[in-house]
Image 1 (cartoon, one colour):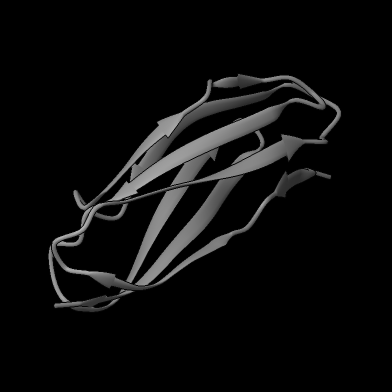
Image 2 (cartoon, rainbow, N blue to C red; image 1 turned 90 degrees about the horizontal axis):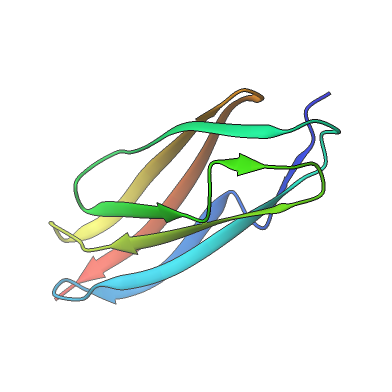
Length: 100
């Protein structure tokens, strides 16, 4: 059984300004009993970028993922980040209400 413990799988930013840039981060602890190899991280659009703390996470170690969201349109936004790894696929969601 894959046991990756995420701090959250949905990041709720609430209401943010259209001309803002929001930086946030999440983390995950590898409790799988085996090494966790991050192969690729893809975001749903160019408005969401990521920086990871490393691609090799040992058992019991923590993986940190920094996110930068720069909205490109107004309204309710739901963007996904997909993390591909040797232990499977993980999807993280970012939600925001982008206003003037």
